[in-house]
Image 1 (cartoon, one colour):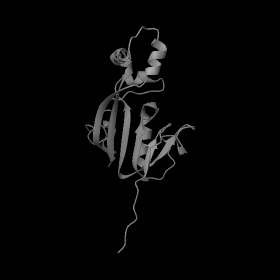
Image 2 (cartoon, one colour):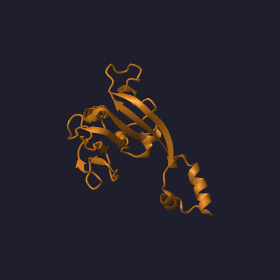
Image 3 (cartoon, one colour):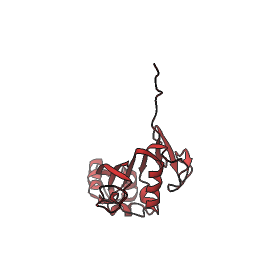
Image 4 (cartoon, helix red, strand yellow):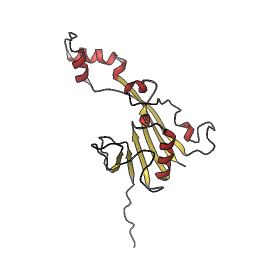
Length: 180
């Protein structure tokens, strides 16, 4: 009886920065992080259909030509491969960093999906999942450094004040798209 070899999925962490994800090949534009390969997101050095999954967390808001990057991701994904993208949600994402050049809404990825209200006659993906999540920036040191002159009496009071400031909250959109 022949036993087929265990096939491990090929996964790409696009725009990995300093984050190393176990089981993923890290790609980034800059040296000094966790990248295994240095490359532009719209010119990836991989063959067509070579990845089962592309994970892109907080990278798409930085790219000038998102259409080219989405096309490139589609090219390197295997049939039925998955793109998981995590992006800042709403206009506040534009204010979060000077390198953010685009805002994302609930329907931002529809133009590339078959559920996109016929915006594109030849969709690239099907939407499997969308979620909006909130998280708070863990920057207590930053808060204390710049607002340290305010007479605060306890750690709880610092936390209460910080939680009321909208700048300390971030909202992100996670989408999971399957290649058609």
